[in-house]
Image (cartoon, rainbow, N blue to C red; front, top):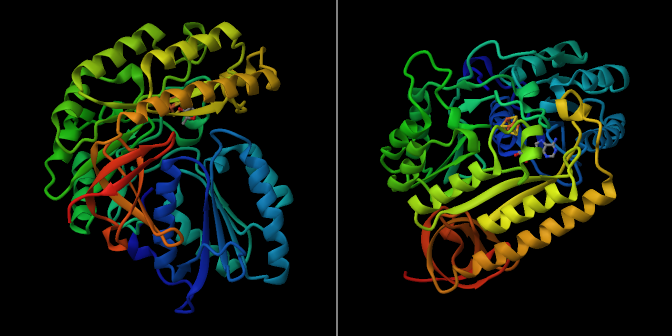
Length: 457
Ligand code: 5AD
Ligand code: SF4
């Protein structure tokens, strides 16, 4: 998403109206919302998270269509804001994000949601200020959806949720067309950013106090493949980022197992700032299902890769994504997934119930699985995963971990942060440690977090 500061100006002429941003979906969307927030601030809005929406002058929904049924959620919310708008006619309602790239959604908005003010998609979010301006001037619904990316995205210095950590897009879109996934249709083909641009952005962020960077892409491993000039691969990019003075931690997501190179494994092993944590979605442990999913690896290849990673990177933490109930999944296929997760022993995992996405090849597959069976399998998967994760977490007991402190909870006076492996750690200490990296001794391990005690001064 790119936008140009000189085109953004205070649309409220100093009146400081209030805007609320609702974000659905993945880290990519969360990061897009930071950029939209930046634009809103520059347009003269102040941001609120008021749950009652009493003082809200503008509400923005950054939508997602990757899983679940976000449509019900969005249209339910719109019903609520329609009523609010009756009492406050100048309330602005803005819709953007992946869901808006779907034709049937736009048709529905045009037909039945004429009170929505501005709608834009994933390829033209940089136009938000211009579109809002047009709406303010004409007081009519503005819908602007691009089918593809027309100019190369460019990042600019932006407002962040945290002052000490930030995300940076390195590649947009996806070429993989996993058969269940809508992303390639709503985010377009892979487009890598020039590495100089990426490095400049990170340097600016570090100058501004950022200690941890998350490099974002649907598949970071294909970074650079589409570049015509200044072509480097992802491992090479990591080397360059690692050299940035003042930066302390580098994370990245997501890696497709089919593209994970030896060079990348060695880079993770050798680069001191790269966190020893790898998110490597497996999706299924059954070769038959993996083929239907168009994942382009087998369970054997995945397991070999995991072995190679574990052999090379001491103590690496592994996380994954798993889909349950893909069309035609048999009990046997499911048990192969269970077997695989037991073999790998992931440190954490995101499990999803398969959700039919119109327009994807999997949606046309005849054998959709009965929801009761899927729920049962999902419940069992969670139980097995939790047992593994709890066991893995116990390893931390008694260890001293470096924690980047993220938040202070006023109510129970506890700090929360993450270790290098991305585990959440709660401990008691001073509020002004937020944003600092401190040593914490782990005294108890729960399934989803660790409890610690700060050591040293
Ligand atoms: N149904 C369920 N899960 C999905 N994911 C993507 N598409 C679907 C879908 N249609 C999951 C995959 C992916 C993660 C980001 O979301 O596991 O890795
Ligand atoms: Fe979707 Fe597959 Fe691309 Fe991930 S790699 S975004 S699951 S198509």
